[in-house]
Image (cartoon, rainbow over the protein chains, first blue to last red):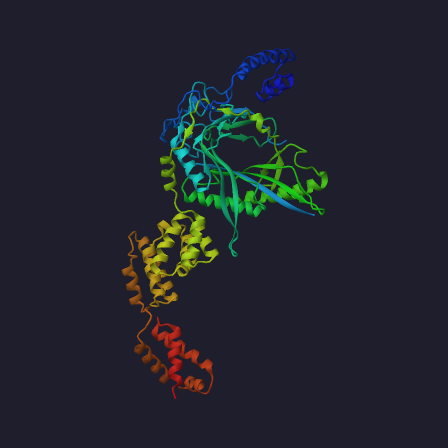
Length: 99
Length: 504
């Protein structure tokens, strides 16, 4: 049995996902996600000791492309989803490097 | 009590592909035209799917083999999740628990004169994608950052060493050797200015106390070092800082979380950066968009066969087979693959490795530097230089005369170049110069005997001085004889002169 889902874990995961949750949401999601995990937990009832770990759902390997140039997007198209741009760069709020 | 410095390096190498790792955008360095080399895949737009670049995997495999790594026959890619504006998908595609290679090593010279080497073990090498580039506004606080995604998705090989390095100088040496090896096998241009070779250094101390304890201090990771000098200086600074820190706090490894620091090359200091998220916080999981890769015996053998002789092996061969010193072998091999090919051709033709090494490291290197040329465009070709030096080896030409011929050939070339024509710098031109200038060593004893007799006849005073016991008098006679004979062997002339004068 995996460790039960706590509010602390949900807070941490929310932080890693850069999500701000209200206290009400935190309670709600802790309950809901706990139920989801509990459901998935049912899989642990199966004996998988003789099953090879699976790296991919499709049983295929070695899908490659050749190292050949394809046209890139025009810059205007590349930047078109940017909330803020000067026509050359994506512009984001300043990232503080120094702590 | 004493301190031991413990260093491990993580090196990121950009692979020499035309296109990015998962899409057909060019991977060329192009910071002047930001965001012109992107597509839905490297922008991380919904619905796009990455497909692995075959060449990127092949070059990775080639590198890992050259680094003596074990190759995994089954490998996969994972998502490493973190939020940063230069990472459009919100995760980096990298390799977590099944990297394609592990357990390699690089041998470095720790003392060239003494021929001492050290084996730096490698934990693993794995293939991943690069992020884009953030440009921070340096004018002040509260401004925006600019993001250029041209670099996002460039194939990177990450090479992680064990903490086997014990000084800043050793770390630099390791990086230099790694760069040389990567350039020899042609997997990266290793252009550090353009960020093709970057390095993070993990540094801490072992404090050896007087009562025989060994205490490890907290590990600090210095990020994004992009020059050999930067690596050396940053580690030196960090060691001094950590000693001070230890003396102040006595903090041991595990007492504080691992710290990430940046390197300010202008102020020559490291500075604290954002706290690094714990490895488990990256929440790796297998990327369902990519299929695993298996390496067949055929593919393995094919790539292995492509690897040329590596720098360390060439150094050994030059010492063992050509009689070169550790120093000379190192200087020649450090000049790169093309230079060694030129050298080997000259050495083979002239039959004297040491002689060839002297010429290559002095005369040729000097001209290449002065002319800002690579060895492939040097006007005197190896077969001509080899032939010229073969005459020196065979005592048909003195080293001094060979230098005169060498200079004459270059003058020919320069004169022709100014007239926009091509000079004849062939072996027959070498023969012509030797003949024109009378540089051939006279081995014809009768000709030498004749000149000796003439000079003795013209110089009764020095001859008399010599006969009365003044050995030094012979010097001026030899000078005159050599001047008349030009290319004669001075040793032989001296012996013949003394024999002549010593006759009763």
